[in-house]
Length: 179
Picture (cartoon, rainbow, N blue to C red):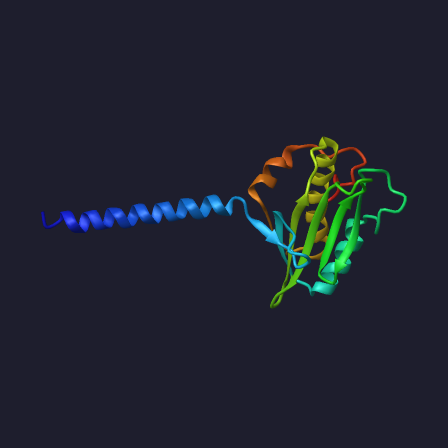
């Protein structure tokens, strides 16, 4: 009987710890990124620590992604980039009614590195657009590696499942250097 009380307390403590871990993992699976502009939230897909200043990272991303800067004369569904602030880029698809894809690339200066976060803010149900977005994500990783060979990039678990899909022909040249 003397061992029963400590054994019961230990069992309760272990079950409480396991429950806490399960709850933390489940809520972490739907990790969200909050943008600085208007409190926009999205599904976090990629984080990376780039070993350059945020200005160099921003300029390098704009150059390496090679996306047009504005919708201009693009066809519907094509991707373009717009600068929202000094530390935020939005990647959008051209849409007549304003309901196309929106992704956010946020830059956060830190001590010695720049944290880059990419989140999907809006993704319509168009399969062709989904393939373009996947290509964009792969191209973003390749671009970060061209900016910093020692980049520490981490993909969300659901993003890793999509790596086996083939890029669209003419979908941004992602067949190039992604490793």
